[in-house]
Image 1 (cartoon, rainbow, N blue to C red):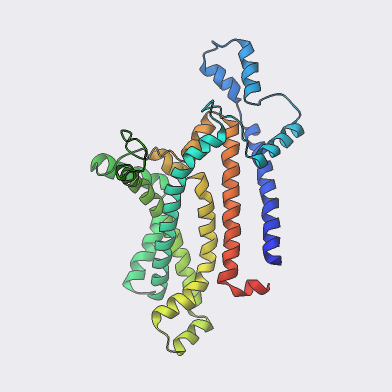
Image 2: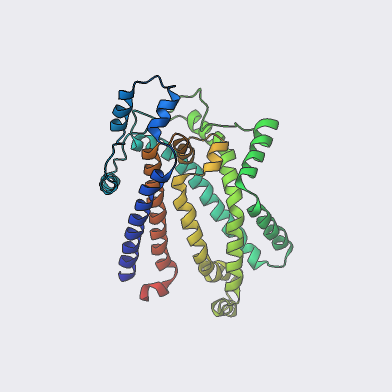
Length: 325
């Protein structure tokens, strides 16, 4: 219990620090959203409108410390204000519309990459030196070194433009009306093949290499040797004795990836024009939509810290030594 309480206290402090940095970053960015709106209007708006817009979106001149406490109040009340780009929608409404798509896209790809990469890494370490290890491990290193942008554009060009097997954008066919129908969910799955596959492909190599290295370190440990000496089957020694301990470092990387799901995959969502949080953040940065940027960064921070806290709890289950720490 003391371990859990210490971790919870640490993450509360980390959240407050991250929220404070989130408060400062947009204010250090060049440009002002109200000035950008006036520039886009071609100076056709009267000067009085500028003051009214500033009051509407909360850009009122006040001391910095006063702005900070108003910001903290909005964070804990989940009132991030009105979005500048998507006016008159609130920031929370805009984020909630994009959240399900990011959870589906990035969440599915991260889980697929972790499961497939970890299983391949375990088997490659168990069969180290074999043709399987000689083929899979260098391939994983090669895949890991390729930028996600290159993989995404190549996939889009080959399967979307040349072969025309898969759609090149959107989360579902625009002609369909959203609803609980097989055609709607089938269209979602069909449009997600390329972005999910691309994101899982670029992440798989890291999990594979990490798990392989961790597994090789475990194979020489005494508990693994004892498992062989007791006459246990290879599969039981491989997974129950070696893989369980080798999984611990990989869980940290998995937590970081799972926490970053809330931010979406910026590159993948932009290339495939997917309506997730990553694409939304990109649009908000272009429009200098400070409330939208701050709201999303707060959600990303909270998701990252929550994922790490859950992994700390899982560590207690996987490593009994922590229960007595």
